[in-house]
Length: 115
Image (cartoon, rainbow, N blue to C red; front, side, top):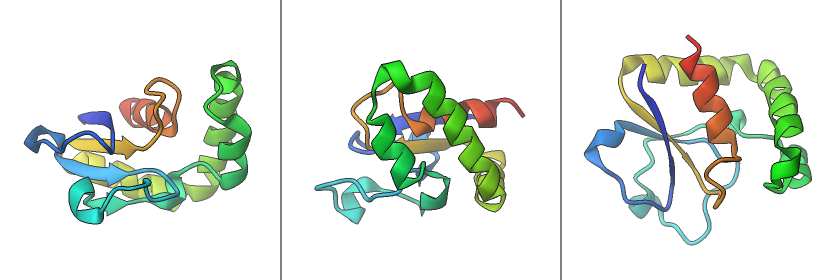
C-alpha cells in the first residue's frame, strides 16, 4: 500500500494517484479545479476543538496524536473508507497546514502504513 502525503497547494502529479483531502475545512484561496481533489474525507480530520487546541504547536504533537487517534476510533467507517481507497492503488493524503511534520496526514499515513 503506497500512501504519500502532500500539501494541497502543491501541484498535482500523475504519481500522486488518488488525491484525498483529509482536512475538515476547504483550503483557503484554492479552487476545486486547481486542487485536483478526487475525494474529500472531512470526517477523518481532527475535530474543530482538537485542531484549535493543537494550533500546530510542536510541543503538543505527542498529545495531539494521542487525542486524534482517539477521535478516529469514533469514525471507523470513514477510516475504513480511507483504507479501502489506499488498498486500490497509490494515494496521496492532502492537507493544508504549513507544517509538514506535525499534521493529521502524518498520523493517517502511519496508521495506513501499519497494515
